Image (cartoon, rainbow, N blue to C red; front, side):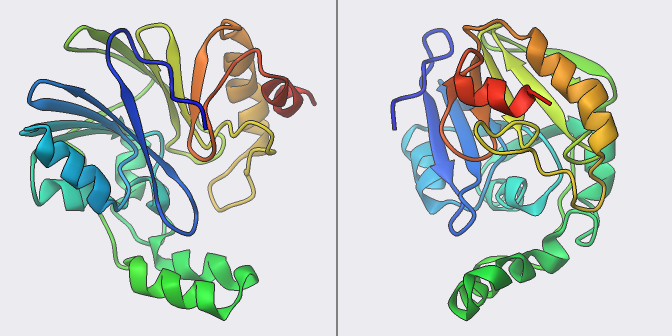
Length: 231
């Protein structure tokens, strides 16, 4: 996999949640870390400790368990500020609404060994909280990186896109290049997705770096993106 283009002068590190391969992104600056969708990862924790990180700003693209599973792990070692949509915060307070309660069952099609591994790895009672929530659009500054968080329900009620420096967008599961966006899970809404998410993604510049919730990064101009956004 090609290295992710940096955000300004900042390297973007990527980590994966085992079994389901959900992406966690980490950007470092001094003793601070900007983290998008933290997953359970001892490797990520080691990077943060080795880099002298003391505070993590955590941004969430949505409330599903595989994209929030590392929040409490990070809270155990670092000072953290979690920011997400108001709806995301409400839903991740419930294992049922974040799908944590049924997460191991999602691996039935992969066979009993995958279900066993999922049951051992994932916490079906998991909940977490946020320090700051928003509706609509929230603009922030993290060191020299301007951030724009845009509420975009579709894949889930609490979904959002996270724009960084006008060059990168963390799409969560509203866009996984080459894969039809999943809207059939409870809370997903195909009509809302077509009315809000698709127009937003189509407006992005061709050179925009897209950092999805699963799989490798790409640019907006990638044919795999066009295929997903074509009815």
